[in-house]
Length: 120
Length: 231
Image (cartoon, rainbow over all chains, first blue to last red; front, top):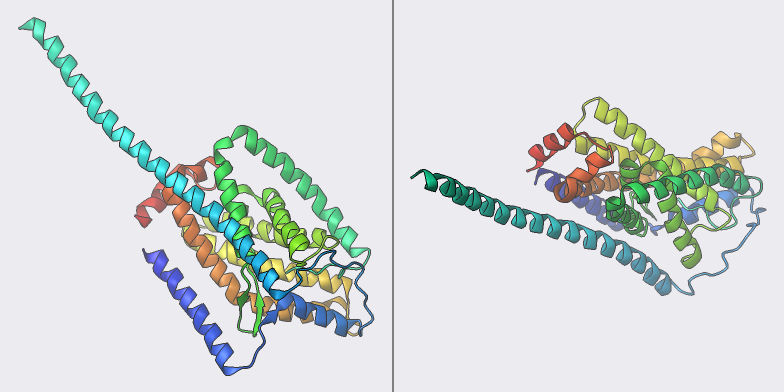
């Protein structure tokens, strides 16, 4: 549990940082990738022409967030599926092991009694 | 860290392709061997790839008032090594280049190098050093993945700086300009990424700890020690 608490505190601090910045400044929270484009423009004094264009762009911000959400959803699905798979597998191994061990102790007891019988 | 489509002039985009392609080829070879020899580890490979998928889709706000995203490559790097991380990163970068116009096909080589090769190499180095020095496992994972994240962005800055040296001050001056945007924004994100990856590792150990021994990530004794500490 200790690690979970530490991570939760870090996430809270991160959220607090965002709330603080967004309420005290009027930052736009634009993408750092796009800002780099601005620096390139400054460095080359606006003379740089990109050598290629993306051949498809999401037609709107909504479509873009749809595709980003899809990306996250695919990833989360795979992670959740396999964690669940491993967990279930572990549990079934544990339960078969415990039934097997009770069965085996019973059988050893019965063989022992079988062996002891002729002697009587 | 995406360098956008068309924003690396010749010869730089070709150079980064030339550096990345051999690593991708070596990664394909390693991936094939993994599939032949340790098939039972494929689910974990899927999880590591999916983790990159999730983290690199999350654009998070940062102290600089701009947004950036974590990379998520540290986990794959620690588990499977940099070459396989490069392949997983390439898949994510292709998705984003084709469907989101983030990054691009001409800049794919450079983006694979920063995200899929440079970051993971740093992650595995820090991980190995930390474990040798006897640091706590989760602290080591935190440091390795957080640094992989930051280094990815520093390398991106370097790639851009090499292609666009400033008229006054050259490559160093423009590196500072790019790193000022990327690195500071990335710092809180890297801390988040490191912390969350450490947590994911805790759960991997809980459900499938023996896998880490099979992958030579930790020894048998190390695994028992970590399990003893967490449960």
